[in-house]
Image (cartoon, rainbow, N blue to C red; front, top):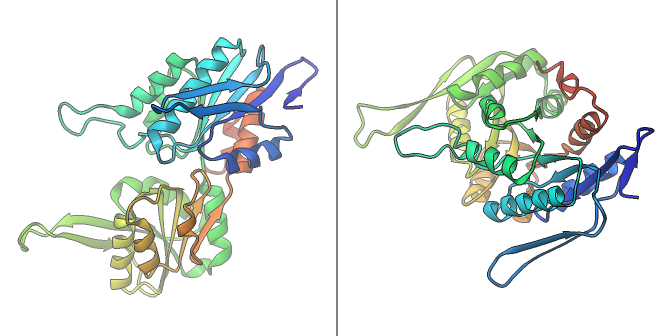
Length: 325
């Protein structure tokens, strides 16, 4: 059986796109359900075809897809899956996006720019989504872009507890790589009982071509520093921040981030960095060539499965993260 039936005859059905099937299978195992068999393929011109092999009529449908590269392909596939479920008379459709594509484009920095994160929400609403479920949105304001419930899950407990068990907490300093991450870093401090430091990036006016200088605010000398961020893409910012910490006398540096986008030069930067360990979650698939000894991937599947179960049973997703708030 692919669905769970309750006394009220509610039926949970889990659907997965092709972007990150390993995570979907872990979530299905945690829920005790199977993934609904789906026929999906690309036509010669790149158009996507999707057909579910079982009836979804009256179901509480959850469509899981990680927006990894090629990101536009997988977003489009998930939109098509939602449309197919709407036309198949699913009772409620929840879009599960462990990594919300285009989340960095959440506001206009200059004129004539899009707000693509809002467009994403509009697209899924138009396709037929009733609810969104995402992990560590780039900014909390994205929750307001979707006209319906948005369940915002956090990887902080998973990542922070792992780091807390690895190092001597009395020697630990939590570091924000920029001013924008201070609030999240402060939550890490509360959980681990550690002090906070910030890497402040500025332009050096005394040097030609406006060279970027990283100033460290806070005590890091002789400390084990953990740099925390929501995502690492090419690795340039986080590795430069780590270098600044070492230059200021840090004994060791770890990096913890929810989403390992890890594109372009990320592999070489991580490999050549003095950082002793990079810790990610599996919201995105980790490229095979990045399976380095110092890269650790923790599973978010139990958290995602618990959230799905709470939604299905009309429980409280927020209660899963009371210790974070």
